Length: 122
Image 1 (cartoon, rainbow, N blue to C red):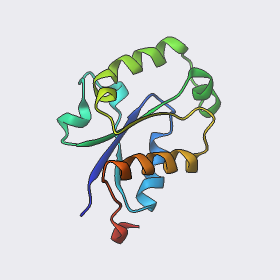
Image 2 (tube, rainbow, N blue to C red):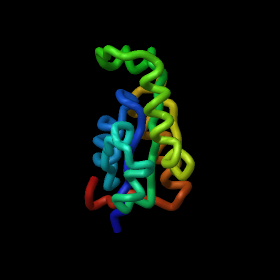
Image 3 (cartoon, rainbow, N blue to C red):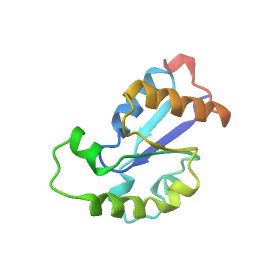
């Protein structure tokens, strides 16, 4: 049975890429724009029991995407994510990690929580 997984995090932390990687591995993973929401825990409001939080420093964000903001914006996004970080399956800093490494670490954390992929979806 497929267990829905919410992926949230700061901008350019790798949420969309991770969702794609996990979907290829058979997980029902969804990227949520939590960092832009005024809802304290959008994932909980939408009914997700398993949440993955990705984080990145401003230097990493700038290396992945052209942005016109500074470190204060990342701090604001982290503050908005505070509630969901507290209940996350994993809170992973993606600085210096390749997409496959992020997916491997997240998958290991999910498996430790008893969340297995649905091989029919892989």
